[in-house]
Image (cartoon, rainbow, N blue to C red; front, side):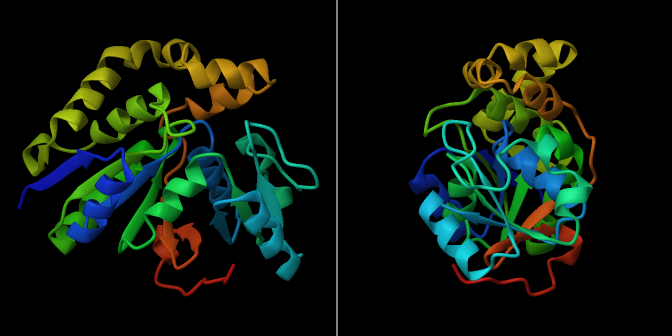
Length: 252
């Protein structure tokens, strides 16, 4: 069976993808997705996304042993342990710990997809692994794949669109029925592949992060296929896909 693929941008599109039983890949390349991938690759037990700073603080009050992390407008909220820089999530800080994470766009996109049976987190860092995992699940489930670029504050984001193309690049042509949006993202990635760093750094969100002192984050998040790990939402918690049969649920 050929697997239909699409990009989804609105809440209505996400609801339809969930209803169709699609595998949903959430992308927030700068930086939420990259932070989740890095945290899990460095040994975190799981990442619990929340919509708001208030929800994150409330959950942390119940579980003070968890790491409280996140950002608003790119900056770590007062009293948080970590921000949203993947470079902060080193093994010495996150190994064998849970992370409560709230971000401006990425965690909201994950939560908006939580009724789907399979929600994966994709980034440049794990593009190939994410594509292969999504294909395997979609073929087994006889369903499609919907890619959700989180954007920035609800606006189109250059890096998320190109990242969608980087993931789609790993979808074998003979196994897929791409929507025009997926084809466009794939063509965009192919066009800029040899100058990926420069193009991504020219984006509006990358320029803002750089102005706030996060230039190294932009560089780190722009790397292709550094990790093989694929984060998967199980209940309320994002864990590595190969552990998704385990039960990791924490009420917020």
